[in-house]
Image (tube, rainbow, N blue to C red):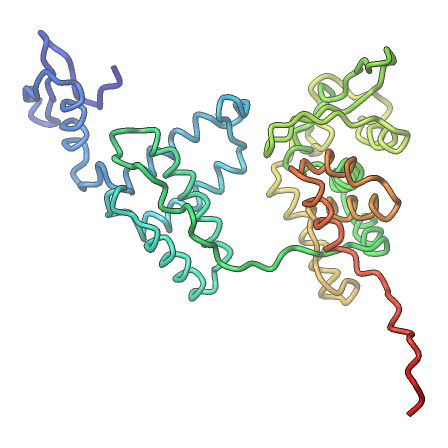
Length: 351
């Protein structure tokens, strides 16, 4: 029945048992009213029904959906972590309001405040969390939410990531990276998959696939957490070399063993392995060996751009990247490449 704590059904009516005194208070026969009264009694701070309350309920619901398939509205652990971090500032701003009271201009004010506080991009991410929360509230009649106030509100301007990592920069950092970092760098560059997906790969992702012509192909099968799409990536000699490197010394990759793992055989968190790479890169920047830093995601962009420069069709790159359109892929790769162009050579008449 989903009754709140300390609410019980007895002889056809609902009762609330007060803490301390143990007194049973009859709170009616209607289950919805009983839930409302129970939540109020259990909430002396008066947050029940406010945005703060429903943001907490949204986060609790998200926690239950971590790792579930997308068809069951599953989310990734990283998404949950981002939501959890966003809830605190959102609660500070919207917490005391009732959900139906939140209007688009309130969301715009939040974004403006973020921009003035030099956290414009962070405010954009928090707005995305708020939008997800209100979409969830729209599925709950008891919230009173009928529209999502975030819809149609332009986010703060952001500078798009257009860092191209050249071969020398890649080689420099690769040579100083740990084995796990090297494997992740290579897999990102070769497969164009999200690093958060790659660090979950085990030998179970390496499968034999029967093609339409009856041939058997050895592939890495990845279900992209962001899009829900399944991508089968052919294991080429280059990929075979990476898998061999990922195997334990003098042994084959065993069942359940992660391709990217710690010395103890445990999987890395994305934040953990990113911090390792970041330390090496910022040291190289400080010592003047790199002009600017880069991260794992920039290697995905490098891989896509290098494939385009090698005349691989954009449609193939699109499938690997998980983009919805070829146009998105074209913008993605071309934004990173600054080729040298010739100036205007047209001869002008003699003056």
